[in-house]
Amino acid sequence: MSPREIAIVSYASLLAVPGEPQRDEVELLLPVVTEAVARSGIPKRELGFTVSGSCDYLGGRPFSFVMALDAIGAWPPIAESHVEMDGAFALYEAWVRLQCGDVDSALVYAFGRSTQGDLGRVLAQQLDPYTLSPLWPDDTALAALQARALLDRGRVSERDFAAVAARTRGGDADELVQRPYTVAPLRAHDRGTVADGAAAVVLAAGDLARKVCKRPAWIRGIDHRIEQHQLGQRDLTRSVSTALAGERAGVGKGPVDVAELYAPYTHQELILREALGLGEGVEVNPSGGALAAHPLMVAGLSRFGEAAERIIDGSANRAVAHATSGPCLQQNLVAVLEAAP
Amino acid sequence: MAATDALTAPYVLEYTYRRSVGPVLGRFLTGLRAGRIEGSRSAAGKVQVPPSEHDPDTGAPTTEFVEVGLAGVVTTWSWATAPRPGQPLAQPFAWALIKLDGADSALLHAVDAGAPEKMKTGMRVKVRWQAERTGAITDIACFEPEAP
Image (cartoon, rainbow over all chains, first blue to last red; front, side, top):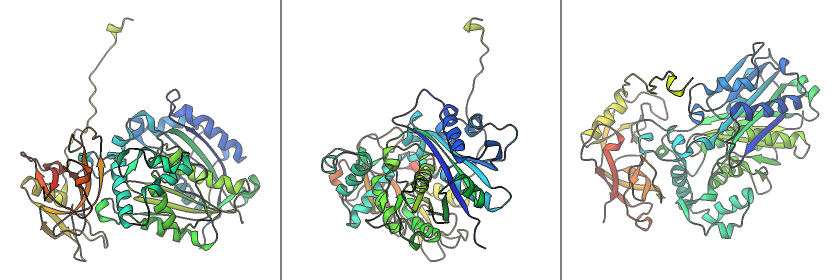
């Protein structure tokens, strides 16, 4: 049985660099959700399903997603769910939920105020609690192990990392590569700018999508794969889970105009490009990606939203959206979005 | 109402229960306390250190343990110029994935090398134990270069 046709019909986001200390999560979300719903053309009360992605460790309190419902309005009662992951994975849940066929639309949102704490310490706590977390390795320390392994393989250089930074966040690669290391072989520009933000996407199925949107971004394939948690059990220079998810999502079945890849580090963009088989002709992260602004839990859903916008506004016919989670690209979600009905 | 009239109560955020680490990690951590490093052997014969509770390829539960060496090879490394609170060493050090002798996977830990120039992929390092061990990954204080 082929999956039900589902499309992204609207997207809105708010990215605050270097941070948004004045507004809380609800205040960040409210304008974003309101805009995405308004642009979808679907009355809010008619949305069949609502799902969010966020992380209690960023808020520093349990069940922080419940408070965020103030931005949505849960009365009269709504069918609602949550994933303790990036909003892109919430979008995947919504896609699965819409496959059931009894509802035709879904609101997906994500929020994260990554600047409220020390992200390096927060992310150390997503690791194995017995063999990794007690050492407090920060995300840059682990990403740098991956970067070194990639350099040792011999096909890329630190200048190539700097070139990714220069393209997505500005600057001159030859100058950037002269700057001091943070955790060698990585420099400050190799890590995405920690930011606060919120994003929202509306999904619609079949005829409803065609009715409310001139050029819906149809999700032609979507797949999520996970690798070993222990870094020492993986080949860090390759992303086999991205390659597998990309293959199953059908990335190689046609030309790709634009790809929005969730690469929190410059070298990870190179690994993802290779895993997805994206050639020189593919425009990668015209939005700046997670390097320009990295609000944790939001950056992945933003990749889906940015890729969809390019279909909706007519500037691309076929796009790849990618989201990651875990240390050194442990988990990867890949989708192919197309204009063709 | 004056501030001194406010009701106050102590608030401690904690999990008030104990948790068993189970037969696989438990054996690994108990081994560390005794100055021994044990890995698990998969159906395909691969030795994982730290041990996996399940075979990464087949999902079968781990039943066989293998003692591995207290020294091994650095498979990749990074240099922490400004160590953060709680990390294994207070002075600049290397993070490394270390494939211990007899193991097929690599373990994350710190290497006290003094300077990044002393680090190299493929170099040999050996365990430096804590003087007092409690059955935790931090029983390994760090690794140090085998050749000074």
